[in-house]
Image (cartoon, rainbow, N blue to C red):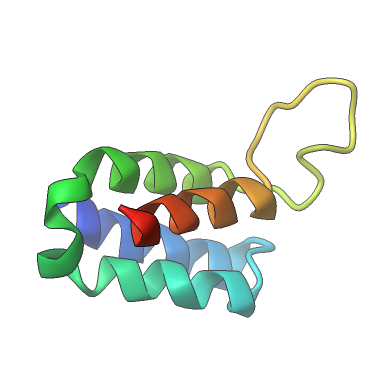
Amino acid sequence: MDIFDELEEATNYQLAHGDLPVWLAEPVLEVARNRDKYRDKEYLIELLLMQVREYDTYAEAGCCKWAFDWEDIKRSLKKLLEE
């Protein structure tokens, strides 16, 4: 299993068992399923994987940021598409 398989697995898990919305999962799955296009951006894939695994709808709700929210994931997706 490579990083792209892990990203797809984590995204599907968060989609089914977490609060990850479909509108956010779809572009992440698009990245995970296009390894040839994103293979040279593995460091961003690793960051995205961590963000998906630790996604929480209310990550910004408390006094401390202890998880990642939709804005973090969107920011990483934007970096992937820009580079």
